[in-house]
Length: 79
Image (tube, rainbow, N blue to C red; front, side, top):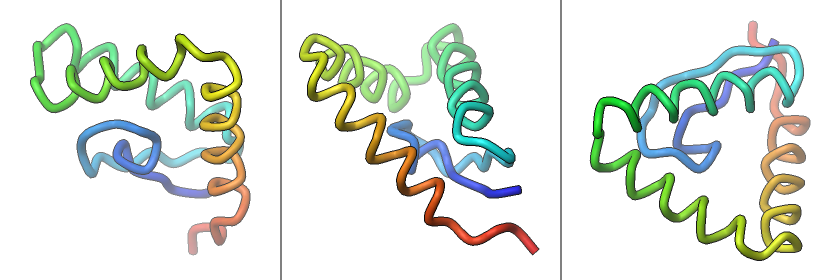
């Protein structure tokens, strides 16, 4: 199991997510982002807007995704 924060995954806070795979942790982060969007949390709304801008360029989005996945894979397992 590994841990990443919302901020490490492109978000706006230090909430921690724990998962065995990057796909699991990305899904947790996405769910958290949607919850913060529904609450109108301004820092998260800004991060979501930045992500939407990134998605306009598929090659940039793919590079961002691969960078985050690589960061997850390089993390040490939780103790």
